[in-house]
Image (cartoon, rainbow, N blue to C red):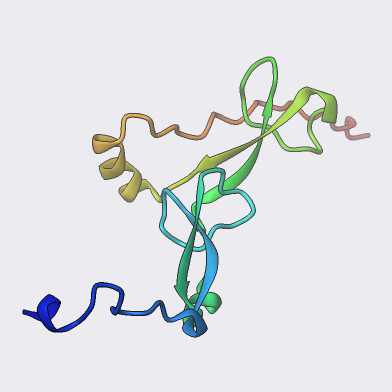
Length: 120
């Protein structure tokens, strides 16, 4: 009945004053952080501007040759490659992996042997 009494052009107006554009992480649904690769730009209420950024995407350094995780102080910078991983807590990861076979776990750490000087 509403469409009979109101013209088609009259309808709800977008609340432009109360909205803002924000990048949203496609995997977590949180505000996109610096390490979120897949994001969507969408309109959200201005009150969401103080929401926390995605805490599940992490920056990880991986050796180019072995594919193992390494720290920047343990290997040469030219041998490392920066990757972003979607990292969930263990229990969440267990259930998430059952429905998402594309989920990639963090690579193992590279074993580093430290040579300390012998005791005199």
